[in-house]
Image (cartoon, rainbow, N blue to C red; front, side, top):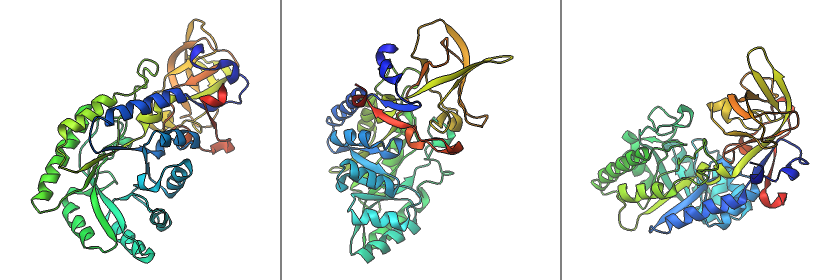
Length: 386
């Protein structure tokens, strides 16, 4: 593993920090563009919530992707990184008036609306600004996904979207409003999905919805299917780029787009997940009564996914190639949940060894906190290290 990382430079850099392999990021973006270029009217918006590091955002912008934002702060971060307003979509179940006004002021491409009250507020604020806001209605399709319960979003019990039973009523309200322009439907069923059958189920549901709406003479200009494509956390080296070919082919084959309809995707984790690693240093090796602990200087404040989702990340000792020993890898935070992994085999660890927690490019740096008055981890791209 030493060859994958600039160890000599890492040894003189304050830990913990995030390291982004921008060569891999660019290869991933190239793979996305290669696939969507095969299809007419396919567009990808990067889900900024996955990672809003300005340097990462700029690389993604240069690749031609749009931006999917869920806050006013993400809209501004996208604009600062170079995304043009006509490529920005704004989703989220709780948009504030200030955030809506920002979107209106910047003339973003579309608001993905999640309720009648939100639709009414957008119409009112657009009227006050003398503008017409393009809106897509986020429909909750009641389609399950084979993923963690905390990142499933497409079931009727979830807080997201408009119930299908209310869909036509809300569309008709939108069509009657003077300061909104109804342009399409938005869906998203969850995250870290690897079973293409889940996306096929979404396609079938959308096909039924389109047929139902057309029977009432309602035409849809654009369809947004969200994102959700997962990455291989078990094998970050062997499967470093997700299967975009199968992903886009699934929609091309199973979603019955009408003539002239555009299809929009909102990919996040699959774009940046594998390019990022959290680099941390061994503080102590503690020999307990029944197990051995590697105590590192990174904690759940730097990468919360294992504590929040019981998420797996491959962990590697990148300082040596000694024989393996079984450890629990834990952080310094005063919480019992501050554990990165239990009973994993690592090359024997010593104080000062560098540990890489892999596949941390998505929902890592962006979710970091200052609990215990800790400093936020810095993020470095590959170009800064060489």
